[in-house]
Image (cartoon, rainbow, N blue to C red; front, side, top):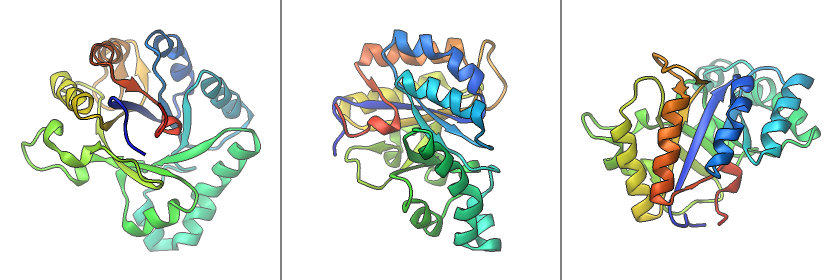
Length: 230
C-alpha cells in the first residue's frame, strides 16, 4: 500500500477520553480523523467513550493496561506474560464490544525487535518515538525514518512529538515534506487542552494550527485504521 497525496496521522495517548471527545467537532470541521491510544482498564464507561470516538470516524488503538515499559517487562517476565497481562485483556474486551483494534503505541516508546514480533501477532501497526532514530541537530523534516512512502502489512511508525511548547515551524516543515513526497507522517501528543501546556499535551490553538496547515497542503488526516485507503 502506498500513501496517496500525503497523509498526516495525529495520535493521542493515555486516558484523556473526555477531552478527546470534546475535540470531535474540531476534527470534523477539518474532515480529520485521529488515533487514540488508550491505556488502563477497559470498563463499560471506557467502552462507551471508545464507541463515541469510533462512531465519529476515529481510530482506537491500545497502549497497555498498566502503561508498562515493554522491554523491561519482557526481560523480567517473558513475552508470554507480557501479552497475557498487558495486552490481551484490553484487546479481548474491545473486540467483544465492536471496537476495531489494529494499532498499538509503545508506552514510553520502549521497544525491541522481540516486542515488535510479539505485538505484530495481534496488531498491524505499532508506533514508537523518533527519538530512537534521531540524529543530533537534525530536524524531523530531514529524518527519513519518520516518512513512510510504502505501508507494509505490518508497519512500525516513528512518531514525532507535537506537544508542549513544540517547534511549530519544525512540524510544519515535516508536514510539507509529507505532502510533497506523498508519504505518511505520524505526530503524537496526549491530552487536548484549552491552554498551552508545559510538556506532553497539545492546546486546542496548536491543534487548530496543524489542522489549518494540513488543509492548505491538501494533506489527508487519517486514523491508523484508514491507512492504505484513499
